[in-house]
Image (tube, rainbow, N blue to C red; front, side, top):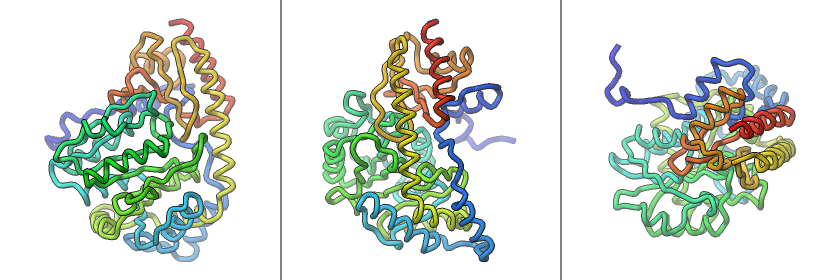
Length: 383
């Protein structure tokens, strides 16, 4: 069967190729997957089951149940002082559904969207899939992998329409300062742009506090604030995200979703509402565990030959430089996997800025992480 021409040259990303290789191997210590190792709390599962028993087994509202949107609003106001209303919330099929619908609603053919390197790989394909043009903005590690005002201005063209932010960052785990966010906001305002701010890791900030971009002066009306329950509440398999946005954008996203998914799983919604309303202390406790894991791994990495790792800041990712080993990101990743059976991701999978780095997800037990570091240390010693 012949594929559509737009897909004939589509190849798996560096991230996907690692995932596919792991599936064919045994005894791999997997530090490549950005998924909490904790299972969903039993009372959250019970809330989903209760929804089924109460008859929530029919088509849901396209925008999501009102109580779920209320819970999202309450969660963000409670944790970050961000105020919104349920009318300005859309419940999505996981966090990845949000950029797709957002770009469908906002982009005209040829519109450019800025991607801050290193960036979460699917963003690029989502922009292209909606007729847009991704424009990579190179950054520097010494600047937190955050763009300067000059770097943003240099990358802008008359076709620049929007920018994607993601912090704490995937893959870098870095957190921009308030001043850096204010510079981005200044640029956004002077260029009259929209912002898709992916803050899915908002609950995992280990230095300072999470700064909500939409809270900056003048940014609320320009910002689509995306988040979800996958990371904070260990609900990746429930596939539920949400976005706060201006009313006209929400309305269009609802229309577009009616052609694709016709709403989000009802039982996931009921579980998510319960989770956002009741689990604050457990979210904090898990974040503390991830922070302890990252600090241990960071310390081990900095003892390895040819490896340097910045202090853990947020999410559950570390992004150490391996350039001192003399290997490229791809070479290091594949040799580590094949020779030591430890899986990480090559930094080059996240844009050119990522070359010379690897992404490590501290999403395994402390015991598994220590074993992984033992094997990686021995691997580096042999190089």
